[in-house]
Amino acid sequence: MQTQELEQKLNKRERYKARLRPIDYFKEFEELDFESLGEGDRFFLQDFGIFTTDFLEDEFTMRLRVPAGRITNEQFAYIADIVEEYDLTLITTARGGLQLHNIDVDDVLEIWKKLNSHSLTTWQSFGDNIRNIVTDVFDGCGKYNKIETYPIVMQMQEYILKNPRYVGMLPRRVSIGISGNTASVTSFFANDLYFALAKKGDVYGFNVYMGGKNTEIAQDADIFLLETEVFDFFKAFVEAFYLHGSRFSRSKTRLFYLIEDIGIDALKAHVEKEYGKPFESSGELQLDKKLFSQNEKLKDGTYSYCYQTDFARLNADEMKEISKFASDNDVEIRIGVDQNIYLLGLKDASTPFASPKESSTIVTCAGSLCPYSFWSIKNETQYLPLSKIAQHGITIGFSGCIKGCGRHRHTDIGLVGLKTNNFGDTDGGARIFIGAVHTTGQSVGRMLFSMVPLVHLHETLELIIKLYELSAYSNFEEFSDAILNKFSEEFLALWVLANLTTKKAIKLEPKGSGFEYEKNLLKTNFADVDFLEPIDEEFSHSVSAMAKKLWTVEGEDPTYKPKINRVNFR
Image (cartoon, rainbow, N blue to C red; front, top):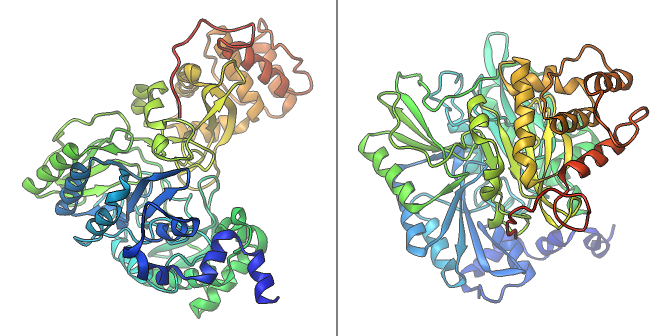
């Protein structure tokens, strides 16, 4: 194919990269006029940790890489000073990093220089790069830890950071997770590449999983690696994706789509060629489901404390208090991929200071801080039954759009905040997902409802949790696997709607399967319920009709509940 013809087939971002490599663009970085950025500038700046859009051109965001979530007390305090000095908003990310928002155009270069000092870096935290590499927050110190992965994480980061061949030059972003624990606080199967603790014979190592993303589970690649082999595999993987990943349609450039296109065996062959020797087949996965408490006892007999953030938000005063306490008491600060702050090395199971929210099992996207979010996710957590969620350790992923940065399909209950006029005036609502078996990467969540108005979200989730409580299973994921996933999505939706209509909570017990069984279960348990549409051949029309009747609010429809207090959404 001729060069000109090939360039026309490349997606827009690749055409920019074909004309100028990001590492070469950086040579003129300090001469930029941040008030007059072009489209190409916005693409390239992401490779150095700066994000802005043409429709919010005066608003800038910067993202710090925090490999494995480990940060020194001094660095934490230093960042707090920057947040305070420039009046910024800071959040922890779902990749264990830190993100600074509301940066004024006149301060961009100055803040960027400050954030790239004190052994901190913003490089390659956005764009087509290896993103912040994550592991479990108890890596190397927790009671479930078998292999400390931090040295491997640092090897990987040092290899790709400012590497001219790879800065901004991958076909698409790559997320990488690694855990040497038999139990982790969160699942890592949403990563493009995941090294999961495994055992072969008497030797611990890692099984390799590839192709995960926010809405898909990574696939078992049938590869076992020793601890000493992970870094070489990583280098081979990066080069293989660089050479063979698609650079055409932007929507099909993630690793998931390369596997979909050529198959996982062909991808393994590409990686193996770069690796230089045959792979060993996978070992036995070493992953168990565990619920973690606020204070965990560590290997050395000391304790940890989970400081639950305000759904990822941290202010400068909080950061300074945490940093001072850590320094005064010789404890370590880590940032979890659950968006909470962990203090490690406490002498006893104490609470140094109270958390502002009950958020330890809830991951949220950036919400109104992101231009793609439909509304302020972090504020709308008020519609969640937080005490029940905390009581049972139910994991919640809350995304502000279908991109899924809250990992809504990799948690016990997933929510996507959207806008709808299905139930009257245009208003906020949430799509609900349930049924994920995420700890061992068996399945993502299935959609229960395409839309529940915000004002009805609390009672709907409370009912779902009540059904779990009636099941007597020890955790929600077991309930999903044993109960919810034995039924169709349409049946489950109708079961929830019928319970809400009758104000009941009837226990679900799968003693059969198939449509006829589900239909008889509905008719037997809800003989007095008007399903509004026939359910003899399918459930979807009845689900739609019952939801509309139950949830319509004041607006054009004649049937509605009493007027609600409106919330202003973005």
